[in-house]
Length: 447
Image (tube, rainbow, N blue to C red; front, top):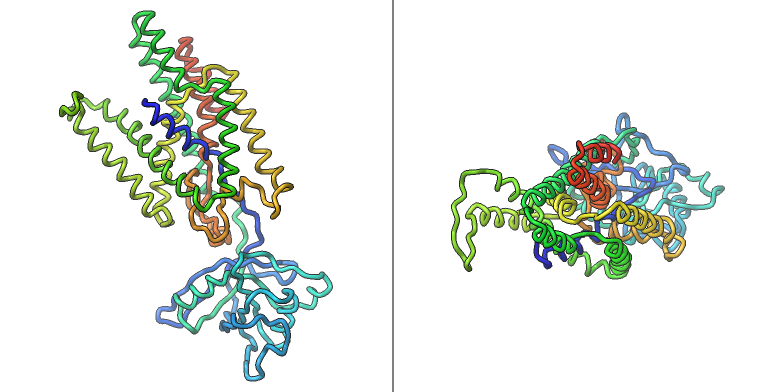
């Protein structure tokens, strides 16, 4: 492996520990048009159940006609024209200028059935004095202003809406899929590392070649010093992303495309070389190259390019991202080697401190009270670009999380690579000591 390829691989791996975490009181706005057949669309809302609770299902709920009054803020009765009739309607007004309670009182006094508050700056749960809130009897929820615009464009001017908050599923079945992907990747990556170790040992027939191989391995081995430098660079780059996310996210996407394309090539070429037929070669630059490997390289590059172009297409782009991500993790686990158990302990210990600090301690330091890890992993509000450092599987149960920015269950690459390096070390240890895979199997099961 060339130094440039190792550099790409190491740099891309810096983002493997990022994983979004979201915690919010969320519900669903179900909107329907009056067309034939009627078009429907769901949108995310945020509400406070301490005000007025929402039903869990759409059964036996009467929809309300939506009145778009985003030109008003509803801070007082004087803002409501005498000719405006909003009785039994769902009213949407703009956020700002007064409290949520004032808006709710104004809408409620004119007979509104539902109050929606459009926000351009993000969603937060409605809040207010406990005594004042007791007088509010209509549902109050925040909705994105851009969703209101999208609603009118998609469904027309005449829209009926209902609000509900389905219960979260007791078990996320998509996590079973993610668990299987992670375990199989760790096990296969560790096994592949052992196969590579065994082939190297069989190829070495004299002490001079063995010494050459040992020196070559130092270039792709995580020594204790390399581990410390790696974690320090992780911290520095995470901070850079926190302050310059808007620009650096595209750098990370580019690095991921290059590293994952090379990783996919390495994974598939290892399989193709096991096939005895189709080994036609051509000469180029004093080298003999298999034609099938040229086509394979083109396929791997094309796969990464297609993902890069359609990366925000949630319906199917996640499949390509998972394939590229698994290939990246496999190649990383196979290529980078822990020389001894001490390096494994240092790596795991430092990454534990890294995680604890950037997830649980930084909220006490940042102005908005959010952890740096969460801010970087989830991306700033309004930015559709996300760091491609996770395995994504669509949620199999429909809930508010599916609508409110978390339609996928996620697992960071780091949760695969870090235990994978230890499993690979155990597999190579079994090979070198000629034991019966006892450490590899026990470590894989323990992970």
